[in-house]
Image (tube, rainbow, N blue to C red; front, side):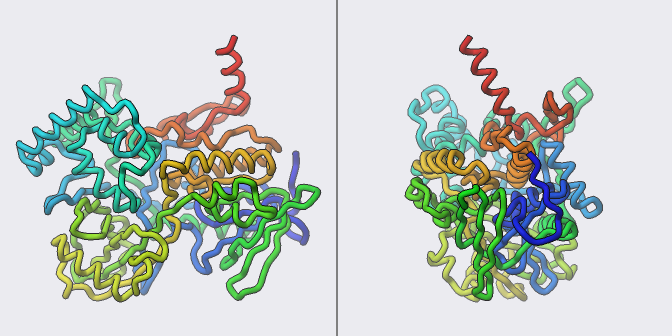
Length: 526
């Protein structure tokens, strides 16, 4: 089925895209490259990139969340290189965990962790691990159940509980086990200890006898020299260069379909006016809850969508008199004495993000719910809180802070509570059946904790579905069987689609064609 209109001219576009984050702009970029007419609406008045944007204040650049550009999908890596061919730099990876006044390398180094924990506590951790391996909980329902079974209760309480509850704002025993299985799958205590032992002894670069470097956790990563927003600015510019639109300050108001199956997308502009886009297909990376509320008529599963929850966060950036404070990209704060969950060092991401070599710039990340006490605090109060907590952590003196800024990010993480899966499945089933030309992509569009590369892959396969005129790929399988996301080599795996005879991406990231799955089920039944 051909949808192509000429990129210029009036009338309906081929595809309207809601949201200019990684998923939305990946789809817009690829569709524009193929000659489709595309119109993108984005609620933010200034920045594209969503949570992957880079905010600039007085020459200081802030990465909202921290984004390592690493993927096992060669197709994603190739697209990154295509969009931003000359602006990647290679950066060392360093992260640590702060716990009870001590720093632990992350990934763990065996001897360092034993020393910091002490012989008695280390022995208790190993005993707890053995106990839960021998007698695991048979009814795994929550995040706590899953992690305790994998690592033992002692290690869970030290390295998982406090930080996880800060991030999600709910007890670990109320979180779905799905989140742990998706995010921690493939990371075993034995593998972590072995890897840590190799690191401690300097043996982690030994090969496995086949000439290839032994599989280990990511040591370096690539990063745009001016932050991740540089990638999405370039994608936006390409889309516009093809005569297509990226409309900033346009928030989705209503989405309706006419008798001919064409879409009418109504957006509220920043000045209070309205814009209407007519399109044959719609790609939505808007939160599922918002999409359901704006569909007309309301879907039968709108009550399911209304139950979906989101976690917001804010970054407090501090400019501090110091050449540098610490070498880490970020430090995870596993300490209940402070509210901050993670501290980024922006110069460690890229020196070009910090314009003054005598000033360090860090970002303290606070996880919250929109309109709760933290979210509603004034910028001045948040900066004072950040200064106080940096002092408690021993990372800087309050009097050395010479400036600050606050960046709020709503709906940063879809919440995995015990009812989310049922609600998402109900909405997905209804919308896919009723609206085959409405496509949900990305982290919030699918209410799944996708990484940037996974979000991009859902958009890539959606573009292929649109071009084919049918749903040949089930994008909901992207990241379904993900292993630990920082293990292995970038772009190391490629899957060859038989009928295309070209590499698509890793077996981890690209779902089988729907037809292939049906044939396999038939073969098993026979």
